[in-house]
Length: 130
Image (cartoon, rainbow, N blue to C red):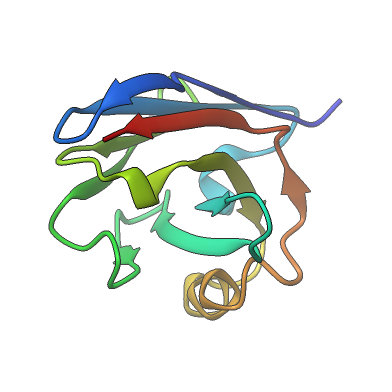
């Protein structure tokens, strides 16, 4: 059974940090790109970051560039999203998703809110207080 399980969300003050985890199972991890997405209440889903688990290439949305860092531990089939200097506007449910297509296509998908990604987790809530 394919699973993506996010964890690490919570309540943090503005300026603080959180590290999200996305644990994958049921598929060949390093054949997939993994993306992080977020959706705030009343807003469309937004692509945040993406990583090629095979070679470590990364992509970041402008809104998080320089504050968030995506990484992959292939031995643990887990992708992390280190979030620093958090802002109230980062408040959202964060999801990870896996894409079997080439990394460049996965990046395009990430910029389009994850259209066509193969598998999705159920999300973890991040709340940043001002």
